[in-house]
Image 1 (spheres, rainbow, N blue to C red):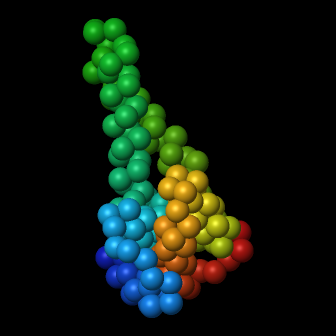
Image 2 (image 1 turned 180 degrees about the horizontal axis):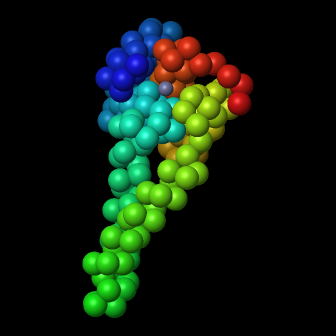
Length: 143
Ligand SMILES: [Zn+2]
């Protein structure tokens, strides 16, 4: 299932959840649902969320290298930093539909959302979106 359909399923599930646990629409809610719907596929090198996260990390590493290195080695250092980050992530990336497609990951995701937002409804809706991804992929492992 691709990102579009995971988001569509998450919106459907969260819409159903809103019938029993209403919550006000907000940009934060939309972001949490979007992240929850896509986060499990962070273990897939061709997924949108993987590319966004790894691209952002590589950009930050390149920018940091560019801003901190001496002028004569800035560009080469930035390129090496970006490539190093990409290789590092690719080497450490878990297998697809492994731990990121588990109920443990769902609990961690919801806990992180709660820790960052201090909002129980956002954590619940993020968890529901995450769960919808696991159900849509037919992957319901404990860990
Ligand atoms: Zn998936």
